[in-house]
Image 1 (cartoon, helix red, strand yellow):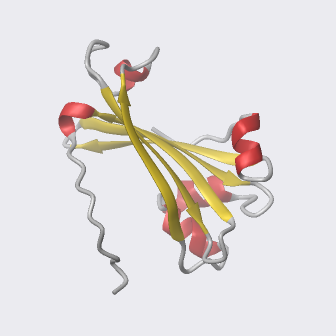
Image 2 (cartoon, rainbow, N blue to C red):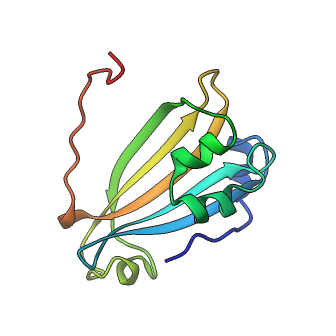
Length: 137
């Protein structure tokens, strides 16, 4: 599935302090869809993020193309719910099986928003492990 560009919702536009570029991508392992992800980049700061992401297939490389070598994960939310509409079809799972939902905000080292992302995970195909250790130490 290829990344695409769409208009950002008013909530996300406010969160990112501007309009944004959008990418949508699926993670597939051994032919099985594991997750479907949407990411939003502030368009004023990343005017060609969608094209760069299509070429590099990497958010980190997209940041680097704009001179951003380091960033922080400001926050991550993790929850679960039943899939909506086409989500079950996209994840190749029954509508009766819950999905995991992760939402995250990445910021620059000075706290400026870089991306907001939301990923839908097929709940029986993943396991999350959260540790409190700072990986930069």
